[in-house]
Length: 222
Image (cartoon, rainbow, N blue to C red; front, top):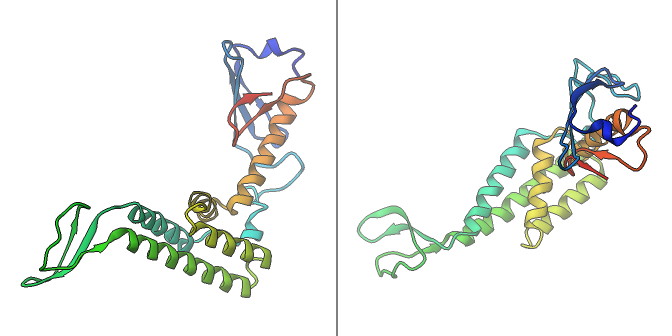
């Protein structure tokens, strides 16, 4: 489409994709990086039809999709991680006042009138409980045929890995994608692959030695 890389410099515009959508782009003459955005896509270039303007997500079936249960479980899990990182303590009862919950800093002096407990331990217990709850939910989905055995096993393993401390961040990222992105992490990867094919059809065809990539790596030229 373009004979040389120089044609791209200092240029803004859009191109119609094979899918009927639009690829908006702009370039920076200083660092020669192109920024691309796929918009208004109605049909993928390989002929895949959409329903009501929404392209089917290849990852939806294998992951079982997200639900309010998944989203609530993940949100509570993030709160539990915050409690795990806390050094504060709390009380529930005290002599003379009965039920009187209160939170104290780490260095608050001990008192003979009430017992204090660690918020970090509460967060740890809550995290493990939510991980176990998620495994039970996935097991029910597996028995119903909503997810495969492999998907159930992977989710259960990731949940266990997340409770080790080392796997906390990877598990939080994975289950966040599963809960909030249609089709989960697999759906996000499939979407990215489709968008990349569209960028390839417009920008990378005929380019010698220069290729442009979109998310998740960001706009860059290789």
